[in-house]
Amino acid sequence: MKKQIFSFLLLFFAATAVNAQSIVVGDMNRDGEVTVSDVTALVSVILGTSEKTYVTADDFGLTASGSTRILVGDMNRDGEVTVSDVTALVSVILGTSEKTYITADDFAVSEEQEYVDLGLPSGTLWATRNIGAESPEDYGDYFAWGEVEPHADNIYEWETYKWCQYHEGLAPQFTKYCSSSGYGGFTDGLTELELADDAAYVNWGSDWRMPSMDQCDELINSEYTTTEWTTVNGVKGMKFTSKVDGYTDKSVFLPAAGYHNSNFWYANYECYYWSRTLPHPVGNPEKAQSLRFHQRSGGPGTVTDNRCTGFSVRPVRLSE
Image 1 (cartoon, rainbow, N blue to C red):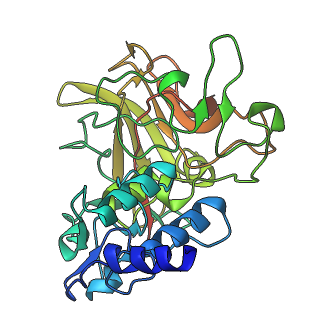
Image 2: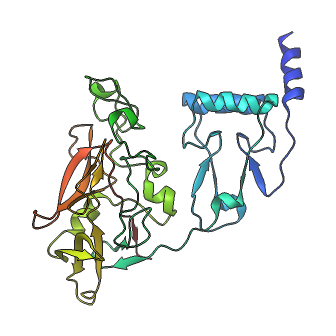
Image 3: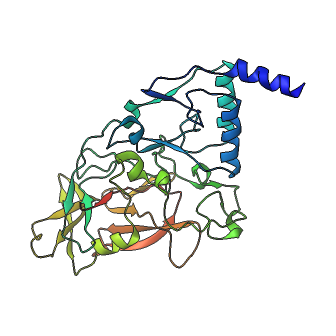
């Protein structure tokens, strides 16, 4: 009886093959159809018994992209696979939801982002503007650490943070990037953001990353740069000018964009820029490392701050 039911489901649920120009979302085995076998495969990924698979620009013969990769079973396109994606996939198979497709348009080449070569020893190139900014002095968007989209309401607190479960009066219980079992019941050994959680990589493409803490330290190293608190088009911020021979005419300006939690603090006076790095050696799991400067400090420095807070992101890339 079970065999007959299963055979019936396979016949009933079989979807039509897609053309070479698109891939149906949820087609885990990439055979052009969505069936019960794809549900089984998706469940295996969620349980951790199978590896995640991705669609990339290479699948469409593209070499550059804005969106760098898409998780195959991510039905709601939120960057992860959960039980809700299984439910959505079953709905598609039953015909109660429409199929959706991944196409070449999802990997359209984004506008070329400008950068400055300060001649730094690591070869790091710093972008000329923040993510979401229209100009070097524009504040741009704010991100919690490990999140790739800004909060529409600009509320950044533990209750709104993607990677934790929070109950008032208790320490955040992290679901990823956890270095202490007291903050989630597990440790995952992750000390830097994975690509899927890197706001620069996701928003600007595969050439870009949020800076590591080493790259932040290099930028503020007085051996390589001079720093000046200045104003550009009415916006205050920190200007970093190269001291490296052959690059002394090169500089990058980081506006003092303040930060967001439940309020908007110290805009045009103080600023924090996320790195992609957790503290070393392992410290408080609630914190991640950032670059900080403000008007009265006399120079930039590095600090650790609550991961749920909305900070600016200035991407970097390595020289070719």
